[in-house]
Image (cartoon, rainbow, N blue to C red; front, top):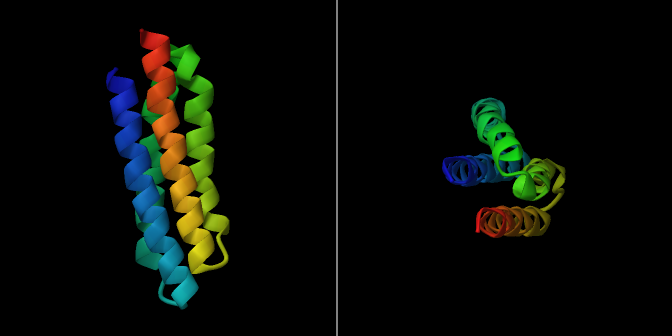
Length: 105
């Protein structure tokens, strides 16, 4: 259960960092600080992702999809696209919890 909780937190943090990077990029601002935060939060996803894939195989695929969905926020080319990508990423993270609940039941 710790792996699920840690991944949920890491995904939320990375989603927020990707949102910040996207808004700065779309506004034409300085990307350096936002990129540094994205790198930090992306790195924080790795450990709980691997743990979840190893410890709760039934949720591993949902976890991988959730991570890829958050990473996909970088391709948004408008504010609306960024918002839609963030919503998809949040839903994918919720799916990890549902999948883990089912696997751990």
